[in-house]
View 1 (cartoon, rainbow, N blue to C red):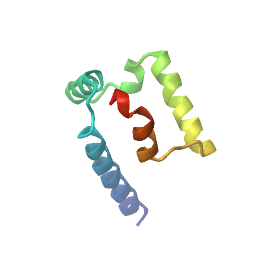
View 2 (cartoon, rainbow, N blue to C red):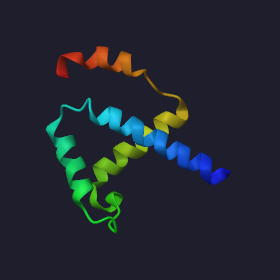
View 3 (cartoon, helix red, strand yellow):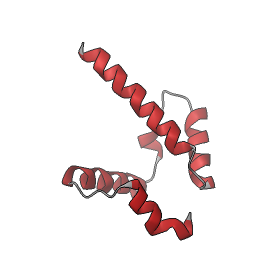
View 4 (cartoon, rainbow, N blue to C red):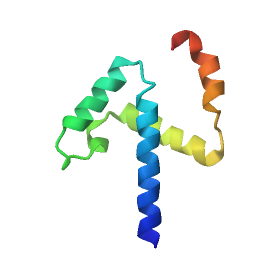
Amino acid sequence: MKAKVHEMNIEKDKLEIIKWVTTLKDETSIERLKMLKNSPSKTDWWDQISDEEKNAIDKGLADIKAGRLKPHKEVRKLYEKWL
């Protein structure tokens, strides 16, 4: 039963990623995703990113755990002039 729930969560995550990717306008992000898609699956992407990127991810995860989140609508409104 636990495996089935995990599988459902993965499918949900995939759909959320697809939805997010369709909103991307940043060419760098799209290029990185293409590189990830085309890279051999034996290499862990974590080992291929910079320390700066790892630190940014770790900071984001800490913000999530601490509840420092903003709804997508609010963030889009804040940064809409750059989007």
